[in-house]
Image (tube, rainbow, N blue to C red):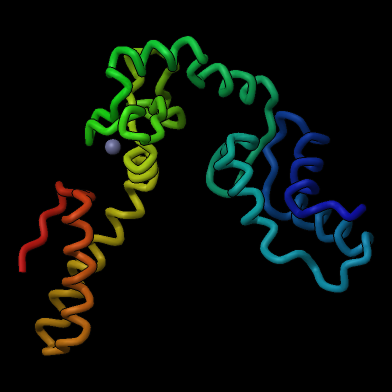
Length: 193
Ligand SMILES: [Zn+2]
């Protein structure tokens, strides 16, 4: 059976444990394996696969463009997850409700134990670092930076459209910004018409 790009990447890193790996050698090896397995063209953007394995916590970023595989760190990372007992404690403390919107299991809403200080920023699996969030607010928190970038972009675009007298674009941006406000997303970034 043919291996996927991510399988190949992981295999390469596992064969070079705790070694700092740069772009060149790993991409060369993956491409070679990939073509040997009968693919007609080289794999598309294997470096993207490396970044996604890093996001999943399987690869450690040593510095820009350099990654490594370290099983001890992966185990450490798993320890940073809340145990089922800790989750139960966090949920009970927060009355089984999202600390942002107050919705919870009794309203049929799924709840999550969130790291207040995120794991990848050194946040520990201690109940003091935990809070109950509904699925929606957990998602928003995880994607906070993306939505911030988006909101700032639409604010700029809206101002530009207004200045240029592009009414269609102005209306489009306004409607999107109103959706941000309806859902109380990134309220700290203030938008005024
Ligand atoms: Zn919520």
